[in-house]
Length: 130
Ligand code: THU
Image 1 (cartoon, rainbow, N blue to C red):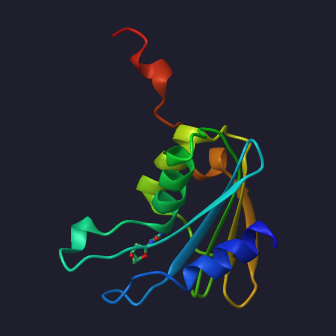
Image 2 (cartoon, rainbow, N blue to C red):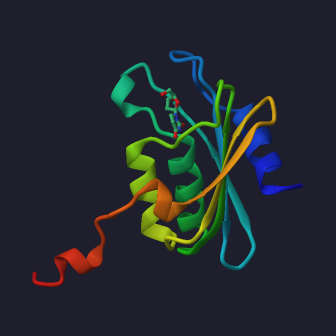
């Protein structure tokens, strides 16, 4: 199954009773294993988590810290753009050139990179004087 198909499949498990907006994400880690996540909302709205965050958490829990490729999918008019927080979360574990495919459930795909999603990222170099 392709990375996007894995994101498409896990999207169906999203817990999104408040927004009704289900999102699925899949990250392929450096060793080839794929980790998936979906958004998990909460009645205390700010406690909800994004699909990308879930996939990243699963990867880190499994002992991996390097993302090689990303796919995200939702039912929207144009390919779903990761929120700002998720861009920073992806950048923590992915180089600027890592491919990110954003999709709609209708099959429209947009290919970009972690660097294009988050130009001028804040990273560890900025704390080198501490
Ligand atoms: N959402 C994600 O899971 N990932 C994104 O990149 C965009 C937004 C979720 C959060 C919330 O559960 C719902 O979509 C509506 O914002």
